[in-house]
Amino acid sequence: MRPDCECSRMVHSPKRIALTGGPGAGKTAVLEVIRQSFCRHVRVLPEAASVLFQGGFPRRDTAPNRAGAQRAIYRVQAELERIAVEEQESAIVLCDRGTVDGLAYWLPPPESFWTEVGTTHADELARYVAVIHLRTPAALQGYDHSNPVRRETAEEAALLDERIREVWAAHPNRTIIEPADTFLHKVEATLDAIRRELPACCRGHGPGRVSDEDCV
Image (cartoon, rainbow, N blue to C red; front, side):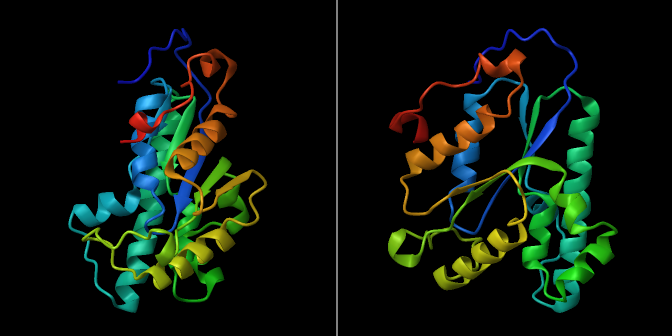
């Protein structure tokens, strides 16, 4: 259950934070703890790719389909963020990946991605006040092969995670959480990065230290 918040402000100026990482990094589990840890003014957006693919968008391993999927993911992500920002109900809009992530999945020349979606790399980086990157563990560090929708091998996941690191590298406020750390540390480091961006009116209502029980 979310903690109560005594903040009386009806309108906030939302700040966007992107939580990213390669396959098997623990992003889904960390997001679940976040949902239970902060007050209602921290809004967690759904992952745009999941919204699309679970809604029936084709997932074929062809160049046209992969390019089309990334264009669609970008636009869904941008609209999810726009709604949350324009509603002005949230102090923090936590994005399950950001618009920049699409570049890591883009097969043609990188610059063509920004041409296709009508923006620039610099403008997309500037959308977010902070980026939190959960690194993917290597095979010997506990990469999870059990997820039935995860297609990547440990080696492929590591390469994708490195591409994600590269596309976000120019962001001035980036927290990188290495895979050798415990899951509890991943949660704490993520919560700390979010706490730093909370406005004063909500800062007193954030979570305390989490325990192993919170991460079950």
